[in-house]
Length: 167
Image: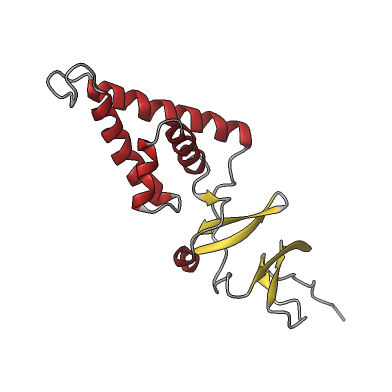
């Protein structure tokens, strides 16, 4: 009599049978310590995509993106006759950076009105670096998504924490 090998279920979120309303993640070989509320995890397969970037690569991409946007804003201000101020283009640079980060902020869970932090001296450095840091991690998200974004995201365990990936 031959016995067929037991094939484990595919990786995904499963009910561990505790009736606690939480799901536990099966990585294809063993249970992980990651849990999620059943309402957070939508039905369907976990999307397969690139692995999240490492910290060093993410830091490098963040710095390059941040410098690139501020530098290009300064170049816009150098266009002859385009300056909003009579002797400097800082107003045009701020407007350019406001528009760019307003558009990019939507990709990483910020609202349109949040882009006005760019206009606050010193706070704008922190805020624009934070946006660039989040963009450098896409398509994965290591921040808590807004409630209206949860329906489009799937939590996936990664390095002892949970990241979210778009379906």
